[in-house]
Image (cartoon, rainbow, N blue to C red; front, side):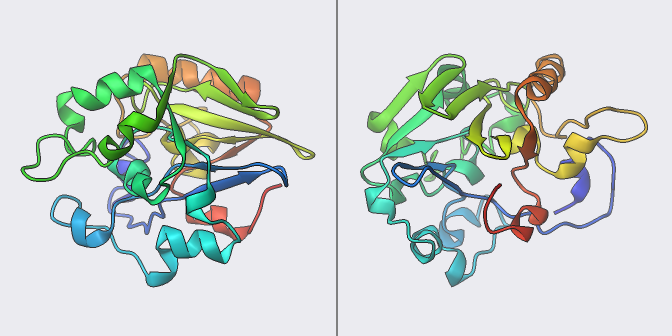
Amino acid sequence: MDRSVFTYGRNFGVRLDAPCVIWVVSDGRTTAVVDAGPAPPELARPYHPLIVRSEEEVPQRALGDRGVDPERVELVVLTHLHWDHCGEAAAFPNATFVVQAAELREAVVPVFTQRVIFDVGQPGYGPRWMPVFDRMQVVDGDVELLPGLDLVCLPGHTPGMQGVSVATAGGAYLIAGDAVPLYENWEGDAHLRHIPNGIHADLRTYERAFRRMEEVADHVLPGHDPAVFEHTSYP
């Protein structure tokens, strides 16, 4: 895809292979998952033609290769309900899914520019979060999910965007989802301290979300940057 989509008009014509990241968070006793990736390409491609996936990247296999059985995962946090973050929700048949109330409302009747990425309005193909609606834990605002695992509201990209702050020996790592799609967004440039995602619902709330991230995060992990895979684990 064009890098400018993520970087608010910068980098026009620069192509990027953007991974859709599923995060595993564990303290050695409890395991949670953050985001559920896109739908299988054969389902998503008519509406999202850029999606590709190898056999090794199928969530059940990728998680299994890391010792995680999706059927035993009890908690999945959805940073937001765009198609590429909740597409494989059904792969976690015994999990509770945590989503912000503002996000769920927006996903039902999204702003017109985001109807396609919420999978609203495609004949015969609906939002991939709907099959797990009865297993959603709907929250409103910042929440401590577990000791050392906190939800942080980061609206702007979508009205109910949330990050996940993980307390570690190396400080607080914030899984920022698409509030920070690339490291470049967080690092900024000569003109902006932080660069917003070009896909957004409200820039004023987005600006406040950046300030909130500065307050809570020692490290920020982006949602679509290939560089996150330079490490197999954090910290």
